[in-house]
Image (cartoon, rainbow, N blue to C red; front, top):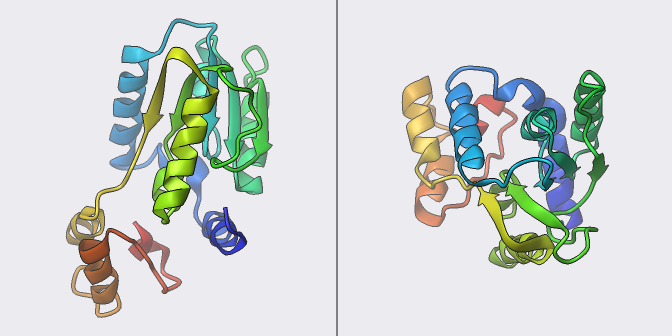
Length: 197
């Protein structure tokens, strides 16, 4: 990522607790549905999985526990430390590797992964060329017949979140929502993490 993008992502995730996000509230539904979709298509263990932008390892550790060889890459050093700690608690099924890296330039060889999870980078990469680079890299490292799982966030996510959490009427939120709806680009210049989601 460009340094300013990478720096912004690191700053955000140094304030937000990604390690516990999927175990709280409606995010539990996101986790269970994602797991269901992965299990529907992934080849049986011990396949090689690359979790790109895998955060603190929620899906990586889950797949490792199921017998997969999982390699996690994330741009946030804090996430890598959290993933390594989570993996260490599961010493019989640890992550194969976890390292700081960039979704647009993966260190893996061509055709070296049976499956690729790209569940975070696409909505953090705001330039079309960066998203395309990340998708090309996922395809490059994927073996023939493998699957890539990609997550995105709708331009309507902020609107729905603001209505369900009661901050729709906040004056500082109006320009954020206007941009989200018009351009599909979420920018939150405030320091309020609650408005980020």
